[in-house]
Image (cartoon, rainbow, N blue to C red; front, side, top):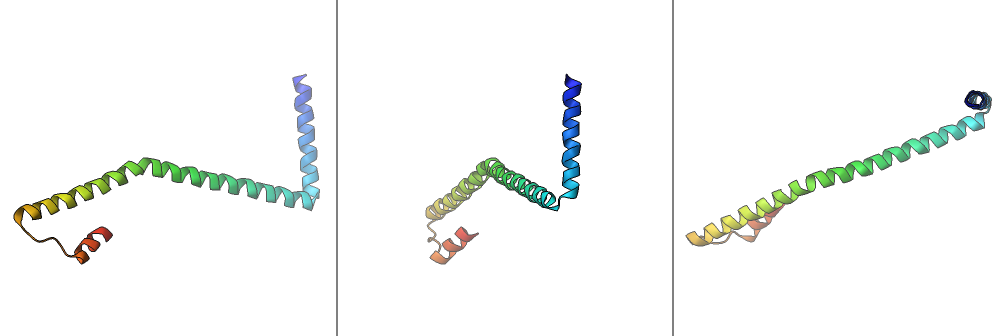
Length: 98
């Protein structure tokens, strides 16, 4: 029974290949479907890859931001203790852009 099913499947596959060889419309349809399938695989792969990168590096980015803010706060408190003036608005904007 399994051999009959295998032979029937092979026969249907061979008939499909023969019809695909002789039919240009079927070849175009197969090309279009395969292109759509591959592009959907690529696009979903990129989306999941981007999400994985965000998930992996989000704590690192947050940690860097927290450390930068902590350094800025420590520098400000040192200046206040020493009695130095606050930096100008241009210097503050420059540090935020860096």
